[in-house]
Length: 296
Image 1 (cartoon, rainbow, N blue to C red):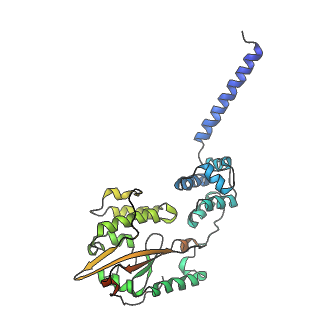
Image 2 (image 1 turned 30 degrees about the horizontal axis):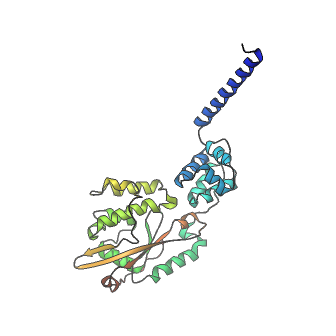
Image 3 (image 1 turned 90 degrees about the horizontal axis):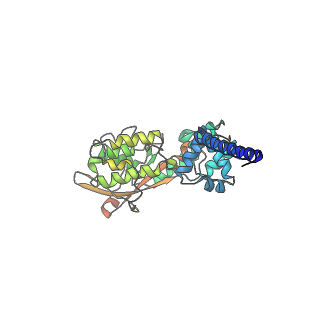
């Protein structure tokens, strides 16, 4: 028959096990802190385990776990270090800092800020240097911010208003009253463009406005429901030609997209420059001329 001492030891062991199980349940249901939820979101988007993130950031897995669960409040430098390892875009790094109780560190002056004059000049040189073929500057949501003269003339040829003052490349391509009727290989181009929006969303995760844009264009008639999700199984071609036809004139282009490599401004990181190149001799011989359109 067990002695009183053994019974007490057994009781104490059971209490420890029950305590550990209770602590585990509390940890499981503990709501993540705002910064912890954002950290987990970006870590999972990058397909990293807590251990992998910890090793790359030079911290312990326990610390990453505690930050995500809300048991530990990270310092400003730790937030920036983890965000850098996860390649979080600058706008979302500011968001993570706010969630952790710190002021943002990255400015958002964009193209119109006084310190962005060299960037404006560089972009203008890129646009002008691509003449006589179309080139456009877009923001993170594919809104056209500037064009060169060739793009102004080209879109003016296709559309009466050239796409309007608030032209959006994605919307114009899907809108039955936009570019869509003039693109002879529209299904291939539109499918590729949707996948580009999925892949090229800043940081790899579409924000609310990009998601709303996708919802809008995918609701147009004739758009397959399967395009709503990213497709990581199809082989990607090096370039997708875009074949335009209006009247008797057919022009074929492919495009390249350039981003600013090392910006320290939120809006400048999100700028894209898309340049259209001729895909055949006929298009190559057909340059565009038009009125200037400055950065805005």
